[in-house]
Image (cartoon, rainbow, N blue to C red; front, side, top):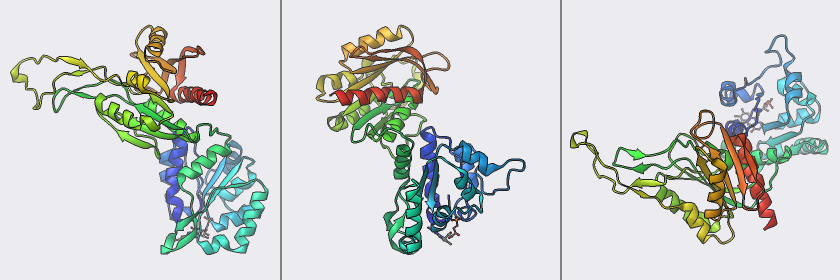
Length: 387
Ligand SMILES: Cc1cc2nc3c(=O)[nH]c(=O)nc-3n(C[C@H](O)[C@H](O)[C@H](O)COP(=O)(O)O)c2cc1C
C-alpha cells in the first residue's frame, strides 16, 4: 500500500482477500501510514502489518516476505512506486520486497490525471507491463481535491477479481446467476418467542463467497443469525420460512442455479399469539403446521435451473440424502451430519456426502466448509457445461 487518498479502499480489499481464504500480509510505505493505520491491517488480517526494513531485528524481513508471497498486490499504487519498481529502486521495505519477489505482481494505480498521463509514468507502466507485471485500472471518475478524470483506483471487487484471475483462479461461473440460501428460519410463537434451529449460515457464506470469486452473479437469501453476508454480494435478509419462500420464488425465474443451504423450518406454530403469552395464564399448547416446502416447489416449477439441496441428518445421512434427491427432483444433494460436536451447524467443518442425480457420488467424509463449497460449485460448473 502506498501513499494515496484511496488507501482507505484497501481495507475492504484486505477483507475480501481474507474472506476468500488468502493469508494477507500488509506492507505500507511511510506515506501510506499518513492515510491509513498499520494497526487496522494487523487487526483485520491477523498478521502484523509492516512499514520499515529495520523493524524486526535478527530477521531480513523483506527477503522472508518476498519468498513467502504467492502474489503481491500494490493497491493503491502511487506514481512514485510505479517509477521505483520500473527502475529497480529498493530504498524502503515495500520496494525491497517487490524487487526480491518472483511471484506475480498486480498493480492498481491511483493518482491525478496529470500524473497518470505524464510521459514518465506512461514509460514506467510500459516497462513494468513488458516484465509481465499486471495492471488493474485506473478508472475514470471523481478524484481527490474535487477533480474528475482518469486515475481513480479500481474498486476493491475489481482488484479482487483481477487477483483471482492472476492466481489462476477459475472464472468458470462467469455470467451465471446463482441463488444461494443460508441460515435458519425463525417461526414466531408470539411477539417475543420463536421456533428456530442451530444453523449459523456459515456454509451458505462459504458458497456465496466462492461462487462470487468464480465470477457468478450471486443472490444471497439469508435467514436470521450471526454471520455477515460476503461483501459485494446482493443479499436479501429474511426471517421466516414463508419470507424465504417468497424471496426465493421472486428471483427464481432469472436464476441459472439454486443452492438451498438454509435450514428452513419444517413446522411453524399454526397460530401466532398477538400479545406475549403470559406465564400466569398456564402452560400454552402449541399446535404446529407444515411450512411451505420451497425445494419441492422449485422442483415442480423449474424450467432450466439446476437445483442443489442440503439434507441435515443425525443418522442414516446418505440414505436420507438419496431419498431427498429423488423425491424433490434435485440435481445434487449435500447430505450432512448434524447434532455432533465439531461438525455441521455452527462449526467451520462439515461431515458430508455429495449425492448426484447422475450417480457420481462422493461418500460421507469430513470437509472444511470452504472445500465443500468448492466441490459443490465444481459440480455445478460441470453440470452447466453439459447442459
Ligand atoms: C493528500 C495527498 C494525496 C496524495 N495522493 C496521491 C495519489 O493518489 N497518487 C499518487 O501517486 N500520489 C499521491 N500523493 C503523493 C504521494 O503521497 C507522494 O508522491 C509520496 O512520496 C508517495 O510515497 P510512496 O510511493 O512511497 O507511498 C498524495 C499526497 C498527498 C499529500
